[in-house]
Length: 230
Ligand SMILES: Nc1ncnc2c1ncn2[C@@H]1O[C@H](COP(=O)(O)OP(=O)(O)OP(=O)(O)O)[C@@H](O)[C@H]1O
Ligand SMILES: [Mg+2]
Image 1 (cartoon, helix red, strand yellow):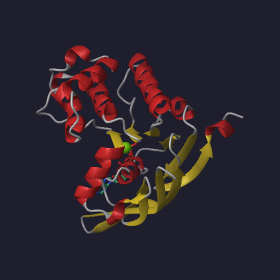
Image 2 (tube, protein in one colour):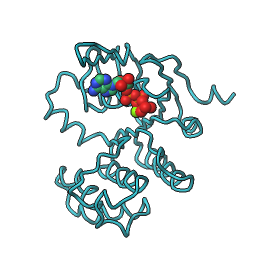
Image 3 (tube, protein in one colour):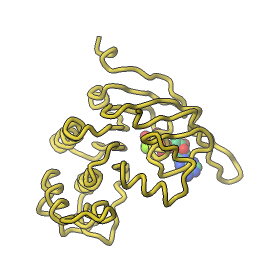
């Protein structure tokens, strides 16, 4: 059973009376535990693709199957329930809730699932990303890289089957970036989490099993990394 299947996915935005197709018939299938990178120039549709795969947005045509559940047949509440059950998301712009502290932000997915001991779990996740002492700070009191790490801790909170990360190391220095990347791959190894990364960092992409390159909303290359390394 595949964990994520994307079939003929197309997305067209209309704004100002004009239509802009930003994804053209994208196809791929991921199995549980796969690691996968999406690379391509700015504006090529990577964030749009990730949002559709995670059920945050709806396609214009084509389908996304998450754990064999077809997302486009669900309403917003049903998609939210699936996301909360199966999906973690690290956003390019973090999307932390500004009125909640770092610790409270990490607790959100745990509380949504009604888990006991949310504060303790959230605290240990903050410890793992090196922010154990900053739990009481609000997002505006944290640097970009720190906010990114809080967003990572939040994405890990419900031990998702599928983790989407949009430029997870985009704002981090080399050391912090290495820690974050290690955490991502640890989660993949320990919990069998499928990783889907968008990155401009080809070294990071090369650590995943498979890389697709998109350009102008089209997949121009899709290959296994061991073939690249030959
Ligand atoms: N809501 C929207 N309405 C209209 N156009 C949009 C909307 N959201 C995104 N776009 C356009 O879709 C295209 C793809 O955007 P997307 O954010 O997916 O690119 P990206 O590959 O993630 O780029 P980057 O590397 O800069 O993050 C861009 O041209 C963008 O302007
Ligand atoms: Mg983007």
